[in-house]
Length: 260
Image 1: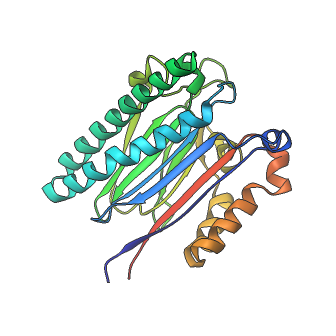
Image 2 (image 1 turned 90 degrees about the horizontal axis):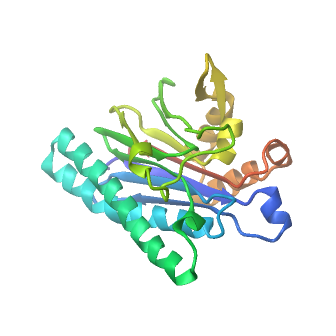
């Protein structure tokens, strides 16, 4: 049998939103393409934005819609450079598409597009060929090899520690980061900033993954059913221990390539 992707993802409302009866402002989407590529994308709607949750959902949907055909075309052309170039173009096109959609929604609502502020973090991988991460703002994307080698797209904060960048800002092009993921990194975690607070650690002024956080999650999810995995992941992110450390909404997506 061909290798296939296993994936689990969940979004959990932070304590402040839950107490106020407000929905989670995070969003996430995961998609496998007909040719076997994986797309995982998450977004954190800004707490200060009136429609941040709508902005987050829109960018996730548009990224999937643009990347899926681009990745399958890239796989058919069998050129690694062609695949990466097509994926980068697709992500940029997705942001443009989402911004146009939200600009019209903002006009209809009589507000500015800043009321839809949201971040963007995602990964696109092709089996056996690697892929890339794409990123605007905070949150993180982590790619792991079986021997715990890792590649991390780390959070980017603004001028102050509690600020960040959004795809809805005028200078989004200068904030959009791409990073190559080489073949062999076939387990990924993509997360919003509510998870990076507990999943990353600082060493030498740089972020790196906190192995005791990721290892047990990956080990459990590798053998669990999708339903059990989602329940366990949700329970972990909504546990009293995690809620006491961060009040943000939290989104975490895990995916791993498995043979057979």
